[in-house]
Length: 81
Image (tube, rainbow, N blue to C red; front, top):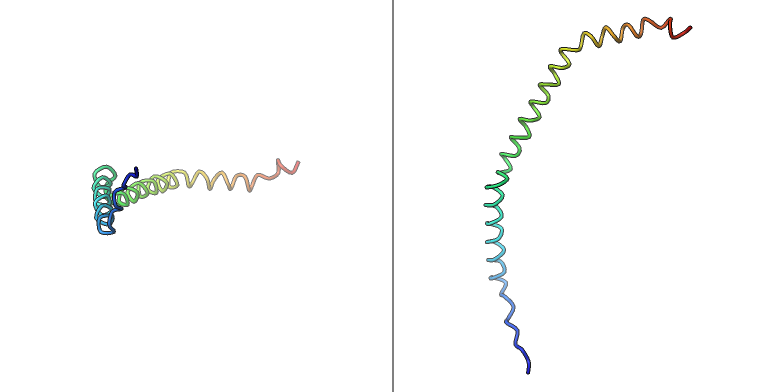
């Protein structure tokens, strides 16, 4: 007694199923992750914020760093003794 297996799906059925799953994935991605443009915009905004904070830190500490470097360069007599 042999069991008959169902025939394999046709190429058209496979393609239709693949397209449907791809569409579902894209809907899911947009719903939960956002579009690529949304992600890029978020990364760009975060980068700009970080750079602005770094620039503010540099501006606030620049003079102190220069003075400290000059002190270290000019005060070498203690190190030579």
